[in-house]
Length: 502
Image 1 (cartoon, rainbow, N blue to C red):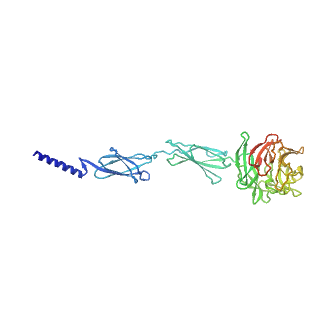
Image 2 (tube, one colour):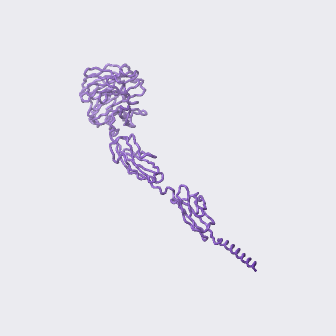
């Protein structure tokens, strides 16, 4: 009987076990599934290879290419689902598993920098907004900070009021930047952007500054750039023996023979227009270029040998046209013939005395020779003959401030050729009181070279001039020496001609 009871009990237990297996429970423990997907919070793009961990079981799986994951046959209870991947902030979601339905979890992950704060708005420091009369070299400075102490990079955008050019300077790590060779008289607008590499760039206010109008350079000369004559100005630092603040004043058009007048604060020069040489003026910064001559151009035997002169007060200009000498107002009005040669000789150079009472003139024939240098009064009467009846080239006439002396050049070799080559040109100073000339080149000039285009220095203690080999093709350099020629010459500007020192 007892055995029968035991058999019945055993059969009941086995029946109960199979019945529980059929409805998903074992000893009253239920099981279920978790499915889910991981996406980016911004844009909801799926994220693959995200590690998904269940707590408290610590089971882990990785998302597939569609950002999906699944846990199957896990015990029915409450879980914490954790998503983690490098570059993203960990994400947690709660999930309650039961046998009635699969649990679906969506985890929206944020990029790890999502909580990063942007840098502060750049505060522009120097130059201050609206600053004016600045040098053409300006250092821009600003400040910005980052709440998260991220590394910052800056970019600057610079515009101006005279053309459409935009200067962009990028990837700066320091809160400053130096701008060089700015246009004199130009107004500039600048703005700074700062980036921490995480957030959107932050933009500063827009500031402006203006560069002073006058470069205040005292040297003017010509350089040949790719076959085109270009006028430059600069300052020479005699303590440092260096050229400073060199500015290209003319661009595009062939321009030469600069002459500065301090009273009018204008530079007169020659420029080709319709295949003729005409007088022009411009401001010291190269702006406001105006043509002075029109119906009667500057003309003679060789355009590179022609020279003109300002009146002392800067109201008028003297210039040659073949055998005639004209004066004209700086605005192009008041054209007047001052002098005409009696034998048809060509006037190549002229210089107006500082007191306005006399004019020095250099004439020559069509080949540049048979030259003569003399002075006339304002009625055209000849006052003094400085030199005449010599062979070779003459040129470079320039009055002293007192008008008692005249500087000029002469080829003492007496050489003459069809191409106007000069072999041994020296500089001379003529004294109107003693009516004699002094050679100031012979003491220091290198054999085989020429001294050309002389001008008195502003204090008249020195002479500025061009020195070059007499081969006619070598480089030309601008030098200075004292008026006696006894002190060692000093080179100022290389590869330059037609100097003026005011």
